[in-house]
Amino acid sequence: MAFKNLLTEKKESVLVVTINRPDKLNALNDETLTELKSLFESLQNDKSINVVIITGAGQKAFVAGADIYELNKLNNISGKKFAEKGQAVFGLIENLNKPVIAAVNGFALGGGCELALSCHIRIASDNARFGQPEVNLGIIPGYGGTQRLARLINSGRAAEMILTGDMINAEEALSYGLVNRVYPAEELLKGALEIANKIASKGQIAVSMALKAINIVNELPLNDGLKLESDLFAECCGSEDFKEGTSAFLEKRKPDFKGR
Ligand code: COA
Image 1 (cartoon, rainbow, N blue to C red):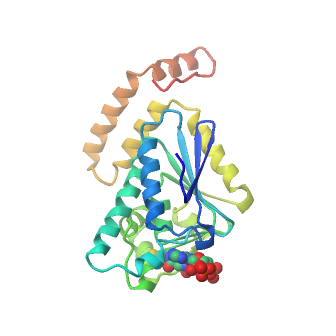
Image 2: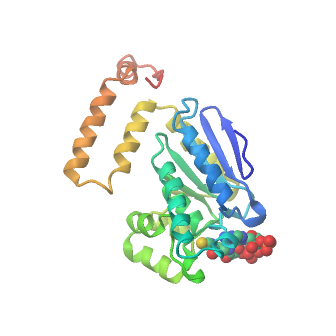
Image 3: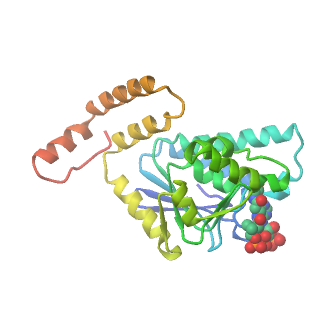
């Protein structure tokens, strides 16, 4: 699949997706969102990919937000469609049946921070900056930021970021739990690939079931979540990978998972 604003590079079963509009700090215009939609729809059934990494082109930005040239034209009717489209695309990423790692290599502002929030794992370079600066433009986050940020960090910290529009640096993001790890900029992609390859070497049915269970945490009461967990656990127990993983342990050898 060829894209205008996305670069894709397959490294064995890991797909590295680079948002590629460096002259606009990788701002998400409508065309880029549409391309992300096509890509993530196709990835759902792509058995050759186990893990996806998203990063931004250049040294300066992951994604500096929604495209402000396009934002400037919105009204109260088109604004609703704009937010719904971004939310739907980010929902595809969050609900993908394989893990998505955000490798945040610079500014992750507005829609860029929201894109990272829709990924399952976030890591950052030491020059990364996170922010929801929409109030500076007279709007609020519309691609899930008010909801996902408040759930991921805490509502007080999310409120401060969203109401002041101030950016936080990588170390602050680490202390907030917004990212898992911080790397020197030149080592970020290597770090992302290490995590991705480790996940890709596991039984992929188990990885996918674990994601499903973790993703539902904010939607279900504990007892319903536990019921789902036991259903998904049982499904794993019916897989060839489960027999292979347990047999390999008992036979003191490396498992050879087939994703079945
Ligand atoms: N939408 C469209 N274009 C954007 C953009 C965005 N969100 N963010 C940056 N750009 C463009 C700039 O207009 C500029 O383009 P130009 O060279 O054609 O004028 C180019 O990217 C470089 O940005 P610039 O502002 O010159 O870089 P900087 O280093 O001085 O500042 C930022 C970097 C990230 C602080 C600044 O670009 C910024 O505040 N961007 C907007 C962030 C934002 O509000 N995002 C949320 C949108 S909802």
